[in-house]
Amino acid sequence: MSVDFRFAFGCCLFFAMVFVASDAQADDAPLQPWRENPWYWSYHGQPVMLMGGSDDDNLFQWPQQQLIPQLDRISAAGGNVIRNTMSDRKDRGFEVYPFRQLDSGKYDLEQWNPEYWQRFERMLEETRKRQIVVQIEVWDRFDYSDNGGNPRWKNHPYNPANNINYTFEQSGFVSEYPDHPGANKQPFFFTTPAQRNNDVVMRYQQNFVDKLLAYTLRYDHVLYCMDNETRAEPAWGTYWARHIKERAVAAGRSVYVTELWDDWNLQADSHKETFDHPELYDFVDVSQNNHNSGDKHWDNFLYVRKYLGKHPRPMNTTKTYGADRNKFGHTDQDGIERFWRHLLAGAASVRFHRPDSGLGISGKAVAAIRAARAVEQLVPFWQLQPANELIRDRRAGQCYLAADQARSLVAYLPKGGEVSIDLSFSSPATATNKATVHWINIDTGDEAATEEHPYTKTISIRSPSTNNWAAVISVD
Image 1 (cartoon, rainbow, N blue to C red):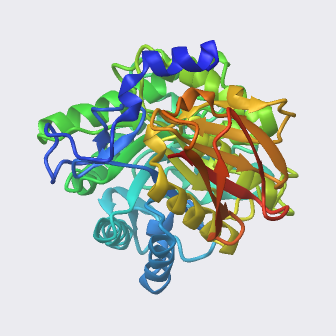
Image 2 (cartoon, helix red, strand yellow):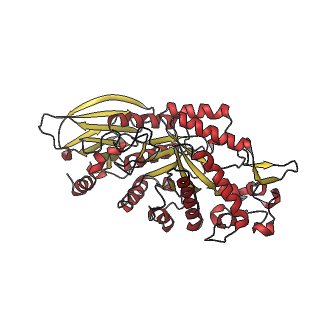
Image 3 (tube, helix red, strand yellow):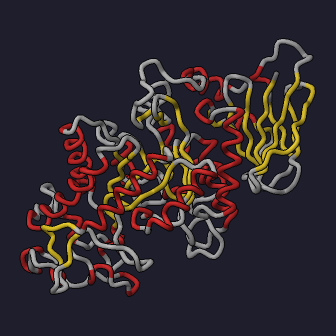
């Protein structure tokens, strides 16, 4: 047994918790970090591994006849989480704004558009029925930019040209923002008291968030992320995180919030604004790690896990990039590999990003989720610890491994092949014990034949084909 592996398990005994509800958590307890192992979520008193995929980032905007089949497909695959930006940009043509449009064509920010909020409530209710967790992103920077020739800000109700509530001079806005939102030139994201204290616009932003909370605080399956891929000043997200928590406390509810930073390097200072403030940010979202591949992707995630070690929190990846012919140059295989590496590295929530940047809830995504649920039936993910050091003579990207204290391991082989794994940590009582290998085809979601091997300190396993495979190894 390696020193690193012994130390990891010795310091983290709670990771061997069995799949039972804590006595301290009632059957009707809302979604919250699991008290027995705060790297993961619990829902209704039981630990839960969040997995999913969806074909859009703002499903609440979808008409009912499209929304229901999408949620049913996610649920049937074993999915139980979606991402939901509060976005209103008209990418598909059926999206609506939250504010009432007057006969003049302008919007009144003092009045709501009932259709927007009815759609939002329908999504909340339908996901609740299916026990699908909703991770909301309150602000999406792409809604307020005209970058790439998309007139999103030009047409938006917050643009003074389109509302009756304030002028360009009063608001400090201009008619167009052609730069990529990552340039952070949009004054919309500088309104808080600790920034430019723009109370002309802030009052309407705050009304919007309070209206959102009037719906979400009635439900127990919602998480809150302040922004999408933000490069805003930290004061922006801090203000909204505190505001949402204050409103929740006033309503007698507990909520869990985070911020999603844009930097692909998880060691960047921007991410530390979340990592270093567990008193405010209850979980972290490291989705931008999914622009990395191979061992770098794995190692970056483990860097964050180690960094958070004194204050363990759920680590979510709500956007797993990777699909053929997308603008980033990633492939379907990249998406599957990232999904499975994060599973074994210790993510609490993994979701395939929408097409064409991700696999959505396509056939490949469904198969990968089904395969993960099949693994979970044999060994729950929250009992596992990353354990690549148990792979003998490992080559980069060859295999990824996690293990528990109950003599079980889960290996992920991205392209099949053969690998040797050290089993000496399991310390069997007699030499007559066997090692059982359950093969699960990630590309189909199906279980293959189960193999039995005589126990040896090092076991060699060969996958049935060159597909993506998971192997669950248990020592009797």
